[in-house]
Structure formats: structure tokens, C-alpha cells
Length: 389
Image 1 (cartoon, rainbow, N blue to C red):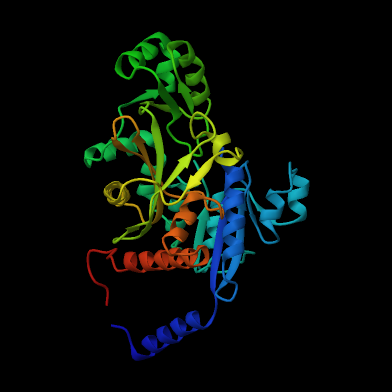
Image 2: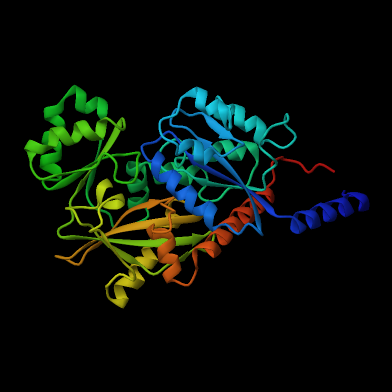
């Protein structure tokens, strides 16, 4: 039983947390091909956070996997090509995530990472968005924004994600999973399988990556080999998808835990043949149209499917659901969910919520609240077979 003295101490600690600012660790950088996008997202998040509410603790990860704490990790990572000598002059350099986890765990040895109330991961791609960092934070028992371990892993692996979507009855395009080892062993057989089962045009993608990195639109058998080489340079597993006729890119943001809500949908009109890396981040001709110019009936369907996709992978906090709408047939397909979508001020996830009545700073507040809510709910679960008095 909890004594009156212990209960009083707990109330005092809770009151103390309410009286002070919430200490938020913003985690960015990482070892994926989306490292630079992560830095831009983190910069936007930290600028928008209300400093009257939050103590912001930036935590950076270099492309080599070294963790930076103290000083100004964002400045260090955006300062161009860095040597270890330069790193040692500014933030503290941790050799590995294991070393950082010891510093994060409450009661651990002294560290330049102050005690954190919650972590806001702004990591994109493998080694950050795929459940690896989420597992570290689970072990450290720290609340964090966004999806848990399983949802993050499923959301990163396009093959597993499509398998889950199919099991939940969501509309998806025909696809094939190709292992790099199979392609290297028998290229002719792999190419014949793609031509026979999917045809052209089709898209060849690394299964575990985002921001359209490594993606090629293939128009004929002649182009297929080079596309497989490109995708296989990023991942051991590839996904090949049939192209949707006259595809329109529709996106919808989702927010919440057990009762998620969906934003108004938006449409992306790339200035290139499809929404590739250059179109996303560098092409000024790419248009973001909010709200999407589609019928009310289709808006309702997009929002419903976005929430269903969110729930299918057991997501939490946030996700952006991407769709392909055929202008030729009118068919709507769920493409993927992004569990840590781009978070710059011009990214679709926050822009869609702004158009739905939730401005950027308030969106950050809600995500932090959802992280704390989810962590508190998890604490309700028993970890032992018998109660301990």
C-alpha cells in the first residue's frame, strides 16, 4: 500500500513538474539518406516551440552514428563536412547509442544530457524512423513523440506495410518484393517476373527508405536493370509497384493515439514526371494544393482510409498517409504511411493541419501531450504476474 507520506511526496513532485517547463529532447540527424531533411525539420520544430513552455535540449546524430549533446548539435551538423577534431571542440561526442542510453536512463551516471520529460524524434529513414531509436527510448523509459517500435518498423518497411494493408482490406496497387540477393543471383528471372506480373510502367524502390530516395520510374524492360541497381544500392529488399494510370498524389495528415483524426487532404503536383527527391525539395515548379480539388465524397473516403491505415499499423501520435488517385479510372489507392513525416514549415504534414485549424506551434503542443498521454497509459499495464504490496 502507498503511505500518506509517499502519496504527499508524489503530489508534490507532480506539482513541481507542472510549475516548471517541460524539458523536451529534440533528436535529429541520423545515419540514413534523409539526414539533411531531418536537420531542416528539427530546425523548424525548435524554432516553433514555445520557450515559455519548453526547455529545448537538442540531441544530434552524425551520419557516422555518433551522438552529440551539449553545445549546439544542430549548428555542428549543419556546418559542412566535419572532422572529429571539429566535433570535439563543440558538443560532447558519444560513441554510440548505448552510451547515450546510459545517460538517458533516470538515476544513471552524471551526463551533459539533463533529465528529460519527453523526446521529440525528428529522424527520417532507417536508424531513426524504423523502430530502432524507439526501442532505445522504450528501454530508457522516456516518453517520446510518434509511433512505437512495431508501428515504426512496419511503417518503414514498404513490403511489410503493404502486406499489413492488404490484410486489413485497404486498396493497394499490385506489387512485388525482390531481395537484392535474388536479383544478383538471377537477374533475368527477376526481370521476367516483373515484366510478366506488373508490366510497364512501374516503380522500383528500396523497401526501407523515404523522401523518394532511390526510386526510379521504369517505362520499359531496357530501363529496369539500372533501376534495380539504384534501389539495391540503398537496401537489401526492394519493392516494385505497378504504376497507377495518370496518378494524382493525394496526402492526408493523421493526429492522435487511440482516437486519431484526419486533416483535410492536399494534392501535390510535381514539376517533374513524378514526385521524386528533386521535386520534393528543390523543384520550384512543384505545387502543394490545399485543400485537394476533389469531391466531398472523395475527401471523406481519403480521411477514412487515412485513419484506417494509421490504425492498421497501430500508429500513435502522428503520421502522414499518402494516396494515389487515378485520373483515368477514379480508383484510389493507399500508397504508404510515414510515421515521422517531414516537419519543416513548408512540409505537407503541418501545412495540412494548419489548413484544418491547428497552427504549427499548437500541433507541436498536441504531439507532446499525446506522447505523455501514451506513456502514462502504458504505465497502467502490469509487468508482474502478482501484485506487490
